[in-house]
Picture 1 (cartoon, rainbow, N blue to C red):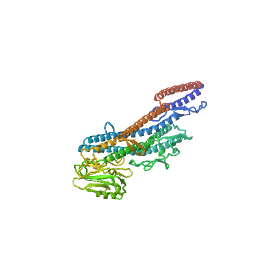
Picture 2: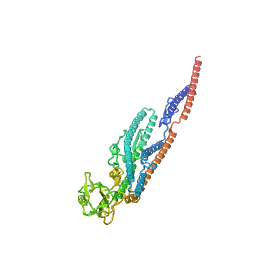
Picture 3: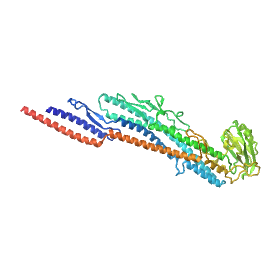
Picture 4: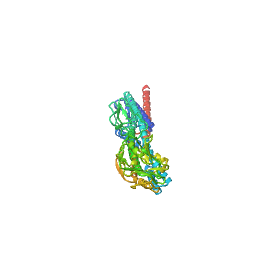
Length: 577
């Protein structure tokens, strides 16, 4: 080989080694950066072209299959993580058996208070305990309902935040597409830009499941799960108007607006990524919990109030006000008789009337009939409450359902109007203990008005030792009855205690399943990321070893060139001699 060939070959080798050293050094420097892939310098010139022997390019390690796996896993993990995180907060709101503040434990405490009162129905302290337990139960149900809606509201707010982040990712991808195109047009290295684009796509996938491909021009194109283009020549912009505080009746579609892209609502097609998880929380998972809680609450209200309205307090209160709001013009349809008694503080009958309800067709007619009873004054107050007042000093009003059947549901007279209701409201959001009982627990119905065929003046109408209303109420909580469907909660036959127990158990199951799914999806994502990193990531030890090899190679090549130059100098000197 001639000295010229040696010098040319050594020069090319020296330059290639410089490129290799630079590439390995950059690999080591970038090793800690997320998404950085290992780069290698590859000579691209033909061996016969001595002039171009130092031409080459930086090649990045890539694996399209593993990259797709990471992105799909990131989308699944993003959804399950968002769901599990929110449901952990729900778990805290549910309370616990250990603390006695879950709805099942609160119902048990209510039952215990009833059992205690049944043993001593005249005890003022035990009556107060029952009312307190009922109030705690109502507060627990209402508080849980509020927590569910707070979590839905937070999910809605997080949807808005996530939409903003998605728009930012799409803009980043658009910018990277432009930079890659510009660099490629000048023959510049694009490997680092491609790394950044892959990382941005993975980040986008964790927020929203997408489909993507790189077109012939090297540009990344992105579609949502429904096939709507999110990134082409330009990035699309998603929009979402947060509703603020949500209530049990606020739902999508309807009061809650959709996630829009180019005027199209894509909410229904977004099922993965954090955005998909948040949508599931807001629109299905948490509303299902609310439906079950509402079903339990409405059943509790109806069952407890029906049982309470079968009884009367001892001593009977001087007045009774309906829970229902009425007007004199309201139609009234009823059959059977209701017993209305005026009693003394000792429970003795002052007067008693069995009123034939079939004789009245309107509330106004009924008022006339009620006002015809000796010792009773009936009126509708400014709030629309039907009020029965005992006119005698120290007298009270006691009601007996007898054969009364009012309205389409055939409720007793007292139950229809709610004169002795224990709870007010009609759902988990509105349930509360009766304001009348909260103010004066002695008005709690404990016994029942005598149903003797003839209840004459002076006879015993109500007694202090009668606990029939309380035992009836306690028994009603453990008696299986038909429970109407409520939203996604199906109709069933169940006791109230079972409804409460099943609600808590179901909620715990949903939370546990979400946590397990999140852990599983996170493990799958981690495995996919590790596989991709092993296939394309930077091995610092390997690159450090290569740096040493390249440096030794550089030094050897430099020595070769120095030797060749020395030989040249000797040859020239000999020729000149």
